[in-house]
Length: 394
Image 1 (tube, rainbow, N blue to C red):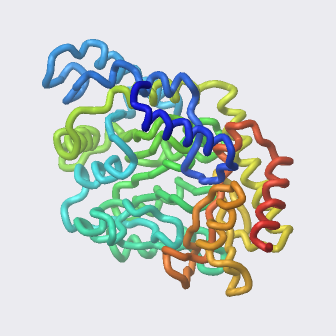
Image 2 (cartoon, helix red, strand yellow; image 1 turned 180 degrees about the horizontal axis):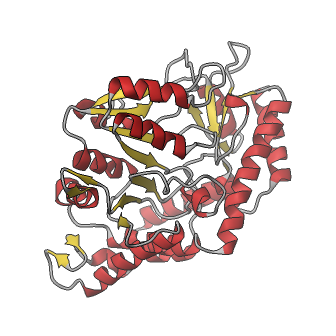
Image 3 (cartoon, rainbow, N blue to C red; image 1 turned 90 degrees about the vertical axis):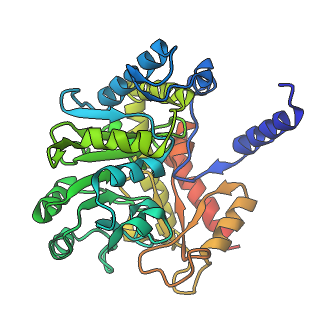
């Protein structure tokens, strides 16, 4: 590379990544093939529009690439083309979620989504997000005693509030989600059911987590977490679902383009296509199950060492650790900083019933997906848990 400054930064970041234990649940390590596709010559092409409906010439191979990526997305999750439409153009998860709301929810209408402190995402209607400024959020929590979802209470709340759309989506909820029960909640109030499976997409692809597809109307996901692809997003929508005689897939496509984005990032789509093919292999299925095993092993070890694990455990790619423990431990910010100084990367995180500031909350969020990619198993997680305990109690 002729740009020495950038080359040096790449080298520094490469060294940093190799020298740390990465326990951030929303990060992973992509294959060389994904990186090659991401930085390919497809980045040169402007492909505004959709396959066979572009606004520029010279797109025969971008059309082929995008259609291939759509087909691979369906294959990865066992879906039929006749039943599911796929949009692979969202640049990331936030605009993907925003596009669903723009396409399907009237301005000012209600979106039912989990609060941040309970494990929801900014784009599920939080006030600091555009999604909470344009639409009204109907916030739901976990049960304060069990710290898990109470589906009966969700149904009662939904029937009273009558949201236009319910988001069954989470960024810091460690337990298995019952999507069938979410379907029952949505049917009880006539809402569209959207599932944001960004964190667990790779686990769903590998058969290590419940699939939302039998029950959801729309499924969104990022591709860079457990799916182990580049930073991008996908929107799946049922072809038979309509709003006022209009297919929701058509409404969502129009919301992405021309509503929110211009030309798609074709190099990014190429990288996603490669990752989806990798996620369809037997090796990836083994990987997905190992991620869950590693999460449970880490949670178990930390609990044995005296740390409180939110909800008592995990069924997914992440776990929440209450490091504050009613003032007997450490604030989340200090815990994160201590661990990073010792070469373990995680993120401070709010926990259900949070009493502290989001900038210095009561816990940390840990996830072994990246370290599982590096080959770590349960015995390694036990050692990492012991190391974490030693650092935080020093």
